Length: 78
Image (cartoon, rainbow, N blue to C red; front, side, top):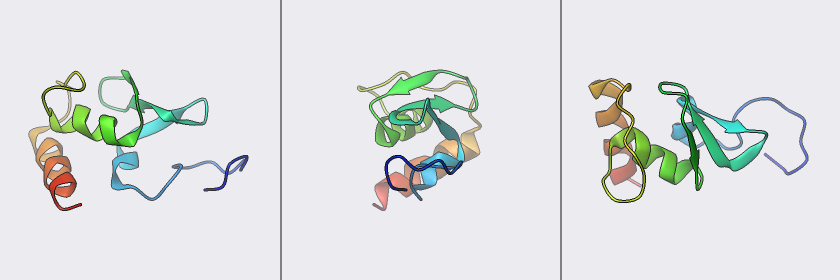
């Protein structure tokens, strides 16, 4: 989506936006729809949050194991 656009919806077609939303229109700040935590650093770090990848970001403990696995598998295939 081009900058300055007033359209609602995800900032890109990345699969991670199914479970997060941009905060104040900033793609670098993503609010988790499961735990309501705001993850800074963009959609990649947000997907690490969902997949419980150790090291960069705190894990989401409210996401289902099914979605956690799906996100981890999708991230591997990129």
